[in-house]
Image (cartoon, rainbow, N blue to C red; front, side):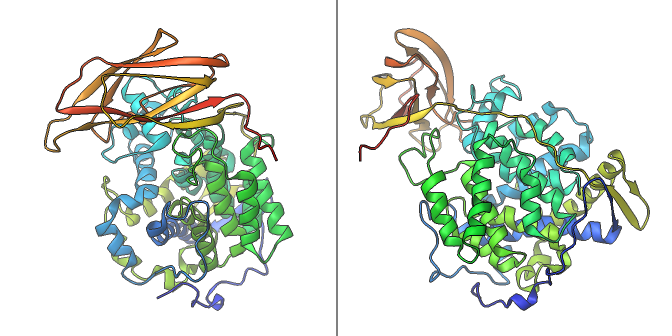
Length: 509
């Protein structure tokens, strides 16, 4: 069946939306609390499944209306069996939920970091850079700090923070506290704010039926001078300006916020894994969807870029707001069949996490001044507090991206003008059935050794970039890489580099 044929009459009436004021006590039956937690987990599972086929296939454009988004009773089970790696939005959350369950709600950051670093799943961008750092002895929070992580502003923790809001209903500051601990394992600045914002949206979704309030209240947790706050504020403004045309907001976002200034894979490219632009597509889906599950998922998906993670987040937040029972049956077709299936790399299913997150929520309610009885919870609703200001890469702008000669070398030399560079490439096996290998190489900048690094051929433990260095004195620099242990059975290939400077290029027209 195609999206667009589901009548909005299937949606609950939100015209008489109630909002609980902060500082007051929110009364929910235990059944209502369970239903909202289930709705959050189910909503994000549905959303990521819907968006999976379109992930990073529509970069710098949106999915046109004439293209159907497919959904039917086989969609969930088929994806769970055939593309289990799609569910990083879920099994990454499960990693942290498992630590909270086994170690306790006060688990130290190293418990989360070690579970994350040694998990069996593959990672990318900020997550992989953080894993490499952790395995190399750089502990959290430095593992996510921009000094050590070139992808500190990427989307990674934004798609992994759902659990924090679901276990802190009506308590966004309590969610922010755990996100401070866990989110800095892999992110910083705008990348961290993505996780804080998502956690606060989930938390606020327990207190209102108005999605606009969910967005605006959650945004209060983010410092106003951050680019993340500015970007989401623009979405709110443009939604008011163009209330019936999400594409106008999409075009405004493209004009102002679509540049990825640091990620070397994204600069001078339509690809954008930055947290704020993808979070903007989430908010676009929520605001223009206005409580309609179908419209919300469709718009968040059609926005493009990380088109599975964005509807996953939007669907999860709306699922928590509506509750499991009020997610339209159309979207829950096939859900019962997979709720007892463990997600890849875990021993946990949706039915498991429904119960675990519920227990965690009960404990957090009690810890934060609420009450729990057999039939009811009383939540002391928190006024959202702004977290501290962080900025990952001030005054860093890409200058050029240069392809390197298509040959393997044990020594590489190049020069650039600016304040920094990132060297992209990979370590790999010549024969696929060969044992894994770890290269070592020295980096020299301006004739002085700057770093010695290891480069595993194994995907799970690889170094995301070969070398990178920012905040050099502005001027001309030379770079040399010397491989210390070359082996003809393996190759360490440098592919291209990006140079950076402290000022943005200005078009001369």
